[in-house]
Image (cartoon, rainbow, N blue to C red):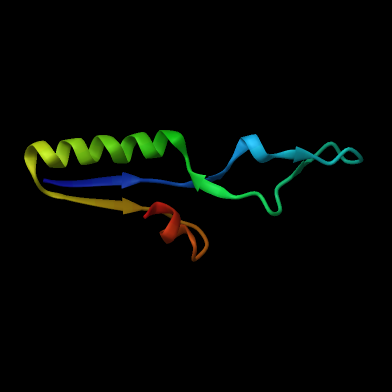
Length: 71
């Protein structure tokens, strides 16, 4: 069985600060992570693979460091 999981990077909302003059979020310098929902999907794919065998492929789109975040 081949399992495909789509995962995306999101900013860590606990680190977002608001610019007081513009009331917009400051996103520069905030670390990014794989979204919690996508992380749950990867964990479920691992469980399925352990039961039935097969291969897991994770798809993501983003900057070059996106690959490292998925790992």
